[in-house]
Image (tube, rainbow, N blue to C red; front, side):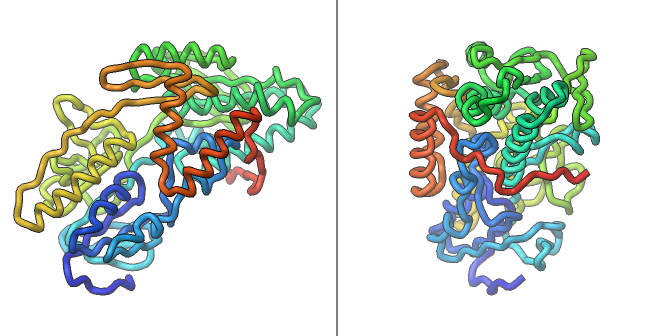
Length: 425
């Protein structure tokens, strides 16, 4: 790999998600060479991916170049590459563009979609973990509406207009609400000769309530809001199979749908080169200690969604959300500085700042450490927090004006089939 030999120690960060970027930014003042490796040259603000998939935002509104985010780092390098394997004995990262020696290694690879071993579902489902996948959903939805507008066969048309979302966590709930808004405000104008009542939105959840990670109060309010939007909710229901058209559930119900979106769970995406003992059986995450170190390796760390740190309060590890990832990245930067200066490291303690989810126009739910509420004020808080969390002033301005436009005009302007979706099966 074409990199200069560092005068100081080298920190290699694998992954430019919330954890990796948070760490790299905090290393700005330290005398270290920082190398970030990622499969994409941009950071994605994943909480707003659902708005890209439903035409509310263009992808460049929620993505930002990694080099531009970290341009203030004195000794920073970025490499667009895929990590093949780690040699922890020789301290070498093997990548698709060459090998790289490290002094400190930080793995922040995040997660990938979990299909729970169902190969048939994996073949036909539409995941939503990246910008290209969100664009695939947008194209598929619009292509199916174009087909439905010209379809004579009633059963085929209903399958094209049936939206089945698997998983009622924050992503699934927000996606269902966004489709409901399209049905109410947008599609009737675009497809005036189509009976929009044939469009159905189904939300499937294996547990007994929507938004399982949030409070019961938030779940109850979200359930009510979704019903008001016309979403059909199926609780205690597991999808057992999907063949590209027909969905089968554990209670022997079937649904014909051409829009099958999978948000039912994630699994860790660890890199190769580590023993099975340091990776959890459930979740496929790296087992880390209170300093985010992997096993007995003092100079190798895992942070963010890929890290499994069992504590008394979080026996199953911390929530796989942005805040734990950001906080772990920030603390690790301090600990690397302390290690360089011969000081003991500080243990990680997660400060829960709350959870939130939006269901649609004027409706959201918010769980704060000491307060739970929903409705318009929660929706306003959700918008403000997400707007301020975006990387880059330009992105904040673009998203803000898009939201204002959408709110005033009851419209979502990014309804473009720029790259038609074709299933590779």
